Amino acid sequence: MPKDVSKEKSINKAKTTFELVVCAVIIGTSVFLGKSCFDKVKVVPSTNQQASTIEEIEIPDASDVLDPNKIVFTPTPINTRMKFSGNLVLVNNDYEYFSTGEEKLVSIMEKNDEAGRKSFIAVDYDYTILEPAYEPLAKMVDDWYGIYGNDTLIVYGSHRTKEFQQQLYDQFTANTSDDGEAPIVARPGFSEHETGLAIDFSETVNYDYQGDGDFQWLNNNCHKYGFVIRYAEDKEAITEYRKEPWHFRYVGIPHAKYMTENNICLEEYIELLRNSYNYSGDHLKIEDEYGAAYEIYFYPSDDGSEVTNVPVPSGVRYDISGNNVDGFIVTVHVDEKTEIGKENPALTTSPYSYTSTTTSEESETTSGESTETTSTETTETTVAE
Ligand SMILES: [Zn+2]
Image (cartoon, rainbow, N blue to C red; front, side, top):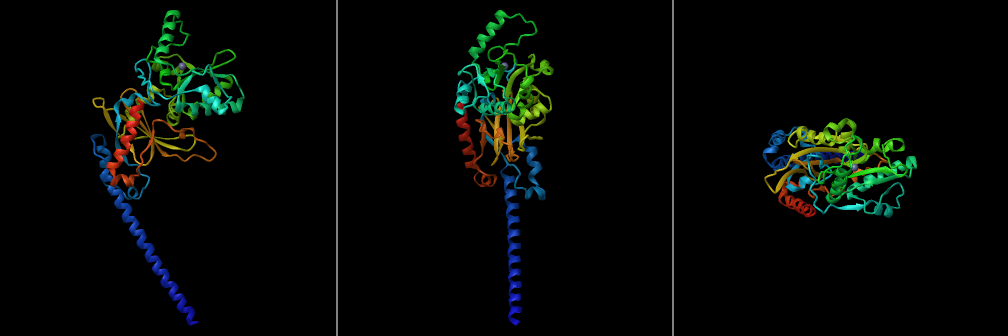
């Protein structure tokens, strides 16, 4: 009997000791987390653009202190000329495309052959598109083909050099009287096809793609793969193009989703981001079909300088694209988790996609290294430019 009592006592004692240790650990962790969060606030760089953000977070409330998901932004030097590159460049009658001559283009037919893909063809092996647009295109057409089994889809227009656009334009101006029916041929330098991000579909029966019948699915669902129908009938006044149901433009999934759901064309989207979703104000928050979450903002280019210090998140993947007008659009992949069974084409690698190699905790003690790492990435991109 006494033996049991003493055993019980020692168990109780052990329990109390254990509870004390647990308490100490909890207090210690809270102090550490609190401290590291306040430290983070100190390293947020101070530029005029960020002044309002700093004021907001200088006195964090309790939820901020313990929120490990809070994104920390750090200015990163980006070659200002990069504003002319990326999946969100606006190319139209007002904004010329400046080719670097070093865009990474892939042959659609070669890629199709490599994958044994039978769902669509291109006119010839020299029909190319920008590499990051190929997989989303292929996935979209494969899904469509899986439903309809229609083997008449053909890519009839894709990347064009400025020289080729010149030939098309000369033919157009020599032979065509504007009857209000024929598609407009853009001046050389001003065609979206020069970006490598646009394709024209046709079909091999009548060579007349109107986005109807079996093809309607492509026009209705392309935004789920990052494409928009660039020239819609109700946007003619803005785009200055008559409707082209065959002309698809790759912009990336969250952007395509937002533009489609809100019925805005690229001109309107670029303006909306500039006016309403500047870095220092609200960011545009989007969740895609697959359950992944994004945060999007605009940052103006410093046109008087070779380099623009664009604030980008630490420890989170992000894409950066120029808008070809006056700045950069940063797309933060806040949460890349996708719903089970859904393969998210947005997760394919993009040449404009980066992840800062340091976590936000590391960046507060080694911010010098962090900047160095990022500028290496920038230099690489600059070479590609
Ligand atoms: Zn086209």
